[in-house]
Picture (tube, rainbow, N blue to C red):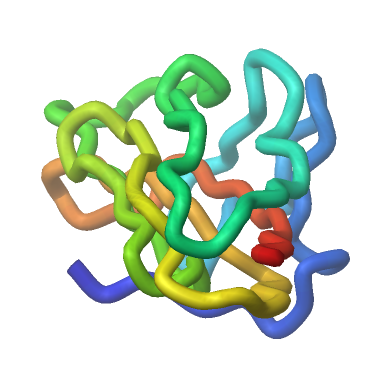
Length: 124
């Protein structure tokens, strides 16, 4: 699955309870909003497993979303991945660094991005 890359974190971040202006991504997506708080910025230690992040519960999917939903993650540290079916982020960061603009998105079975979230990683 190819992830859409936002131009800037500030232009695409949807705050809790807000609808995104015209959806996310290039033109064809549906409006979306978060149910709970956005995924907060993350900090981790290199070569130590992260506490898993459950992303699916943070999203609301407005009709007519066509399931099942799959999740994608980009911009995360090497060694950290997302489960395509559950949206759970887990793993062990391979190296220290700053990873601004990590991007989670949910896609329905028609390939439409139906929700997304930007956040940053700091690995020490």
